[in-house]
Amino acid sequence: MEKTYPNVSVIIPHLNQHRWIGICLKSIAEQSFPVDNIEVLLVDNGSTHMPEDEVKPFPFTKLLLQEEPGPGPARNLGVSEAKGDYLFFIDADCRAHKDWIKNGIAALNSEGSAPLIGGDVKIDCKDFNALTPLEAYESIFAYRQKEYIKKMGFSGSGNLATRPDAFHKVGPFPGLNVAEDRAWGGVAIQKGLSFDYVAEMLIYHPARESTDEIYQKWDRHTRHDYEDMKLNSLAGIKWFIRTIMVLFSIPVHSMKIITSDRIQGFSHKMGAITMLSKIRWFRVKAMLALLFSKAYREKGVQWNRP
Image 1: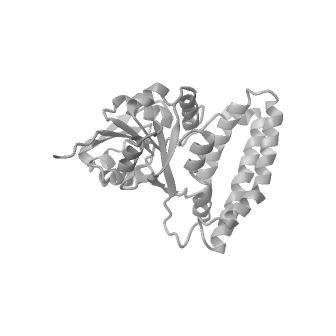
Image 2: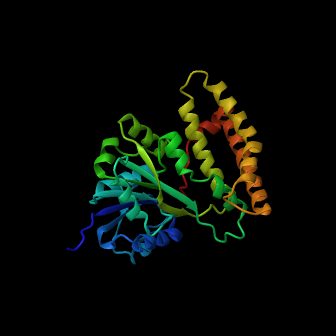
Image 3: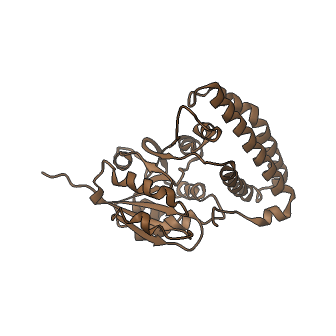
């Protein structure tokens, strides 16, 4: 008797990631799960031009446009068009391991599984024998999915899977004014749903190519954290203490780099420590600016729009 397979909807937000999206779609086409049972909803979010040429080689892909800014609204539009029995979320600059979908479905169907699962994210370095300082740093500190899920109760939405009924029980992702994956995970917990970490549901993310990219990320995250904290009593004092803790985390996390087995070699570890110091100093300055500069606060959360 011929085996039957469920249908899977893969939802991908896209914003000016034309150089990456073909790699992402190729990794979906090469899944060990039957491609005839996969639909991709690629949701452009205001790119300089729609990725029509990049999509043409992949007929399982439907290209949509979401004009409201933010990956959350883009993912929501994809969900509204999805017809699959399962929803898988991945970012446009990532590539999926060939067993990404197969392992995700197996995890969701395993006894006692949580209704929401997040997978592992590894840095896709160009040359593992000659890491850039950013690659070395991100190999240790970026995309800590296991920690997010086990300790903080949410999964990054760049590697997330569930069923439509569970998604709709939680509701849509929020917009740019908050960290949408963390906020969405908080709503899920409030509504009685939980997350499991599934290491075998693996994707690869390229390291950022410039410090400006990672500064932009931390500017966004720092603003989100400030918005969460400013409503609390004694918010200013708590925020200042938190700033000091970020500063003093540099020597603590430098030791983490030195003892880590994620990267090898003295030069790689020194590069990671240098990058750690630059990023933590940037965060400290951004945190102080949010506390003392009205103009900086009013600038608001910026995403990578032109």
